[in-house]
Image 1: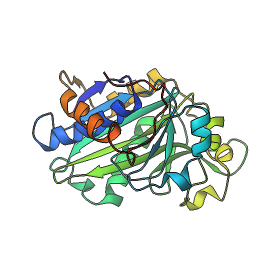
Image 2 (image 1 turned 90 degrees about the vertical axis):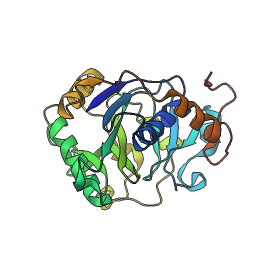
Image 3 (image 1 turned 180 degrees about the vertical axis):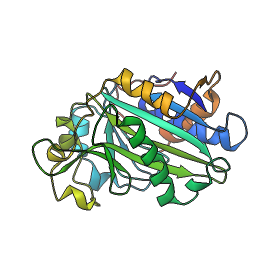
Length: 254
């Protein structure tokens, strides 16, 4: 597997690059399998492909704090990202990983591997709900969410990506995100502040563990820049459905 440790200037570019890696692999224009790591320099809201901004996001608060609200190509729920939240993306070929062809099996396969990788850094980490990684709460018999994950399937490849909060400003989650329309049973109606937590690990330690755990030993020398630029232009610069809110002073792609 190849690795790409690359954070682009804007949230739109970073979301577009995840999608472009999948498209390039599917078209036979890039490597079949890759691990990308990135971290947004700005706080941003990212909706799933079918999420509804009006019910899952406090849009007035986002406008007040100049926080962009964008949509990604994969399913799943709405997340908040930014400094202190390491993002990872895996492009996996179905021919190599036949066990990921069904959605539930794909979640199970990837997240079980993630648990094995992260367990030395975060004892007690486990899979919960459909696609969450959790840690036991030190103060109560409850589980705290430290990672949310989603996937996008094509004919020959899967994009699997998610969040790894390690030093994130958790107070902003409840201020910017509404209560989700669908909640995992283990949440038990808790507010965002009672439900999310940071991993007890540094960004460096997380990145090194992921690279080693996924055996991403080769660097990806060329990334699909033209595809990334095209996705930014055709979606995030052209469609209010993909760029629900972009502050006037937000960084822009060149």
